Image (cartoon, rainbow, N blue to C red):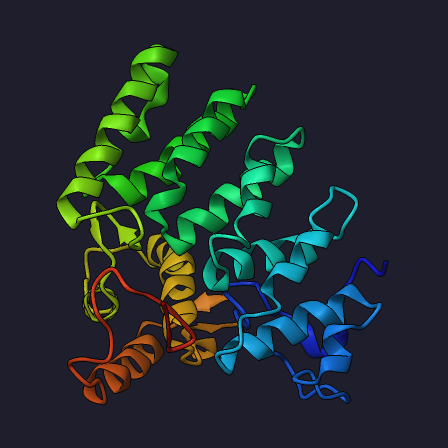
Length: 281
């Protein structure tokens, strides 16, 4: 398997570059069944992406087959991102397998994909991943990911090193139950201790562009995740957010401003999953 993506995917799945956008028009029809059945895993990945953009997520589960340590890193990153952002609970079985599998690398990739997508129902699986992680840096990374879902601001969940293993697992479980009960179940998407709300995220992103107290490098790093979340939910083209991998607050404000101006008040409901503008029910 070629370790590099085809030229039309240059920068795709990189969040300070193309994100969920292709670099150029491919020579073949990625929305065809032939592309989905290709022997080239890169073509299958690109085809699943283009199908999902059209609201057809039926092929997302095909990506589970590339989730092995031998696969190219960017292929894995794209596959876990699409599984988390556009998959169903059945598709997530592949992510759950990675969380408690033998590969530290794949475990972290799965955790970051789940964190970006924000599925509350997968937090217990993330906690199990934390419990089997052997390296402290991995446990800290997973803890930070769970915190971004369960806590309004980084707190106890973001600081696993400060507690015994048993106490920390209790703290995370308690935070999970509180949030689940407060929003009426664990099927919702969440972000910072509340049901994920696309318009609220967009407004926050817009405000951040004008915050003179925020360092540009800090803003660049923050927007890697925020751009991922916004683009995965809405399907909006966010390639202008970064210019030569440098963040462009004016371009972001323009894109987000256009989104908010044209937004129907009933278009996005809090806690409901959306994939490229299509509700997942």
